[in-house]
Length: 101
Image 1 (cartoon, helix red, strand yellow):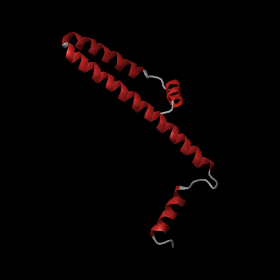
Image 2 (cartoon, rainbow, N blue to C red):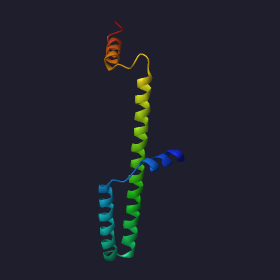
Image 3 (cartoon, rainbow, N blue to C red):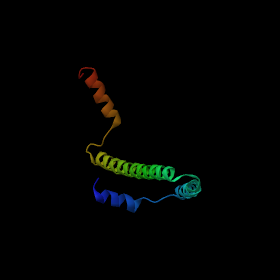
Image 4 (cartoon, helix red, strand yellow):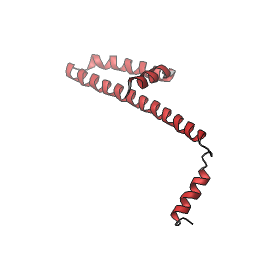
């Protein structure tokens, strides 16, 4: 993934107050668990949390890129002459299915 897309994602993505609340709750529970788990269990838990963070970051980036692709597709459709028509496309596909009548 090009670094400039990651930079754009970071610049235009903000955490919601709900996301911040959930993160604080997660941190509170993690602190509580740390006191109850043995060292090897803490290592596994921290590894799991790191993977969860990586997955969340990648999902967020994928979603951001999907939004960019959507905007580019809409822009492309709006710039077409004649403009895109869903009805015309359906009629064309029906003609092709019926042998080009």
